[in-house]
Length: 346
Ligand code: DOR
Ligand code: ZN
Image (cartoon, rainbow, N blue to C red; front, side, top):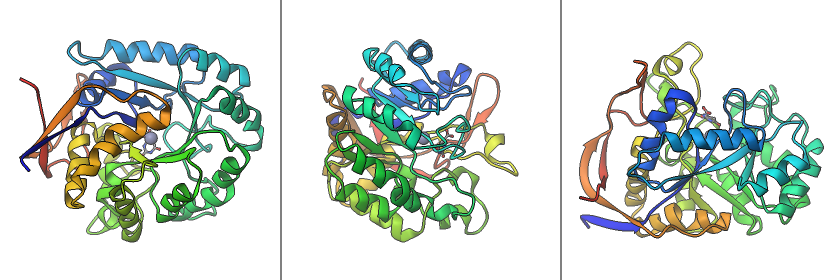
């Protein structure tokens, strides 16, 4: 097969950042995705409807006129989030709220410290049908970083899904066989996103032969058996797993540092990376469900109507992209050769 078309995809989890960075990140995503779930972990975080709508306007202002792209906004849950905040957000079209355990990742210091305090908010979310998005890691210092997702399932997520059976929950960027199995064993109200890096890489790609800061993200890459379980999950064609890149840019000097930031900036090659993965799995016909059907179905939104075409064509991911302020970002998979390319309509 030299080319194929699929219904236009959406990205159900990414980070656009703010300010000048939007002129880089929004066009990169809008080139192939029609919608994206925009993470609220700015500094300060997006904690209410007013902030979310203002952020949405800034994203739309950075969207090139030739692209028909809709950002889907989210709220950042804190210890101070109220049921009224949720009701107001839902009325304003905000589709989801994000649970970061405090201290879990970039700009998560304001996040929820006690799950129990959040129960009234989760009850309201369930009633107004707002999705709960979870960063599934505990942050207790005594828990090994490689075990944090599994412990989160056992200590937190299983309690949320048991207690709030009608709440639709997306377990974001899953990284372990345990997470994939948890999702499969849960009701139809529980689904997961999977990133390109967790399908393509394992922790050897982070640590063998020297530290590779551009492969560092959170939750951190796990051992190869977990990578294999995630690949099997997408290859199964289950509608519980869908596309969410977690594209998360940091300036080059913030990644290549003594204390490097977590995040892979994959927007420039996102759909091509997923095509490569499904091709390697010999399951290219399952890409469309993963990229374009199961996400909108889970969110209760219409599927896109347009199509995109991918053509078999070798190209190299650029080694850097330069921002207007002169800073550079190293894209995920920089310098690697990919076999599929988005065909731009003539
Ligand atoms: O690697 C990550 N980067 N994981 C996250 O959860 C957050 C993200 C970011 O915002 O940089
Ligand atoms: Zn993320």
